[in-house]
Length: 295
Length: 317
Image 1 (cartoon, each protein chain N blue to C red):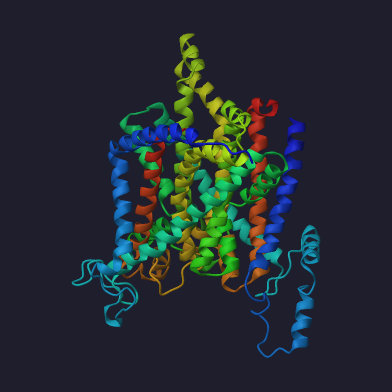
Image 2: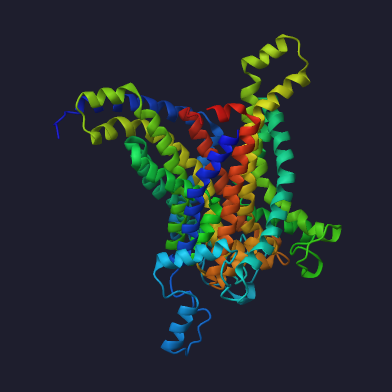
C-alpha cells in the first residue's frame, strides 16, 4: 500500500466541518420548539439515569391496601398501580428500560446498516446486488410485523427485543446509506483522490464517510421515534420486558384492567411514550432543517 | 405498459422467495423444541422420535424447507400445534377481519389526510398550515395502542357510547353489515387511522406546496385558466406519488393492526398472532406472518403498476 500523507487532506475538511457544525448549532439555538423538545428529552434521560438518587419510593414494593390510589394521593403524587406500587417512581424508573430499548437499536442499526450501505454503494457490482437484494426482502415486511415476528419467535426479554428491533432498522438505514454513497461515488473529487494514489480505505475514510455520514445520521434520528413506539409496543404485547420490571409499555399493559376503576392513571405510562416520541420527532425535524438536509 | 408489468412481476419472485425463507427460519430461531408445548412430560424417547417424524422435524433443514414450500403451493400450511386445526383455515378467517379493519381505517384516513394536507399546502405558512403540521406530527408520534386505550376510556368508560371490545354483540365473531356490528368497528378503525392521517397529510402538504410554486402552474394562471382547473392539473401531477404513499400505508395498516387488535380484542390476524406467540404455536405464527407479508408484497406490486398507469414517465424511465 502506498504511503500517502493524508494530514493535508484532513485539515481543511475538519476546518470546514467546524464552521458547518457551528452554523447548525447556532441555527438550533434559535429554534425554541426544538430546544424545548431537547430539554424535555434531556430531563427524561437524566431522571432515568439518576432515579436511585432522587429519593423516590421503591418501584418494586407495593402494598395490597393501597392499590390503584388516584392521582394526587398523599405520599403518592401520581397514585399507585394495580399492585400498590408508587406510579411516580415506576414512571421515572420505567424510563431506564424504555429509553434504553427504544434508542439503542437505532444506534446499532446505524453502525451496521451504515457500514453495509457504504460498502454496497462504494463497491457496486455483485456485492451491491447481494446486499441490496437481501435488504429488499426485509422491506417486504411492515416494520411492526417484522418486530413482532422475530420477538415472538425469540421470546420475551430485553436482549431479544434489542436484537429484533436492530434487525428491523438495519434495512432502511442500509438503503439510505447505499443511495447516498453511490451518489457521492460518481463525483469528480473521488476520481481525483483515486488518481492521486489514495487506497480504497483512505478514499472511503476521508472522502466518502465525511460526506455521507450526516444524511445517514439525520435519517437514523428520524427512526428513533418509531423505534421507541415499537419497543414499548413489544412490551405492551408481552414479548418485550418481563414483569416486574418497570417499563412504560408493560405498565400500560398491566394497568389496562384498571381503566374502569381509575382510567386516567392507566393512561399515564402511554402518555410518557407519547411525549418522548413526539419530542424525538420534533428534535429530528429541527436538526434536519438546521442541517438543511432535504429528503 | 405490459412489459413493465411483466418485469415487476418477475422482480417480485426473488422477494417472495426470500420472504418464505425468513418465515421458515422464524421457527428455527425459536429457542427450545417446537413440540414441547404438546409433548406429554412422560413421553418415552421412541414416542418423542415418532412425534418428531410425524411433524417432519427429523429431516435436514433444506429438505424441511422444500417439503414446507411444496405443501404451501397446495394450500397446506401445516397444522396448528395448539388446536390441531389446519393453519390455513385459521389464518384466512382472521385475515378477513383484519382486512375489514384496515380498509375501514383507510376509508377514514385517506380523505381526511388528503384534505388536511391540501389545506396546509395551499395556505402555506399560515396559522392553518401550522395547525395541520402539528396534527400530523402528533399523528405520526402517537403510540396508537395507547390512543386506543384513551379512546376506550372516553367513549366506552366515561360516555358509554361505543363498545370497547370484540367484533360484534356478545363476543360474536361473524361479521355483518348492521349498526350492531359496525359500532364495534368505530373505535379500532379511528385509532388505526391516526398514523396514516399524519403521514398522508404530510406527504400531500409537501406535494401541493412544491407543485403550486412550479412554472407550469404560473403559466396556467397566466393564460387565464380558472383556479379549479389549475387545481385539477396539480392534483393529476400529485396523484401518482400520493397513491403510492397511500398504497404502502394500506399495507402498513394491516401490519399495524396487530397492536390495535390486541387492545380491542378484534378477532383478526393480530389477535391470532398474539395467541400463537403465547401458546408457542410456531406453525400458526409462521403461517400468519407469511400471509401478511405476501399480502404486503402483492400490495407493493399493485401500487407500482397503478402508479405506472397514471404516470407515463415511470414506464419510460
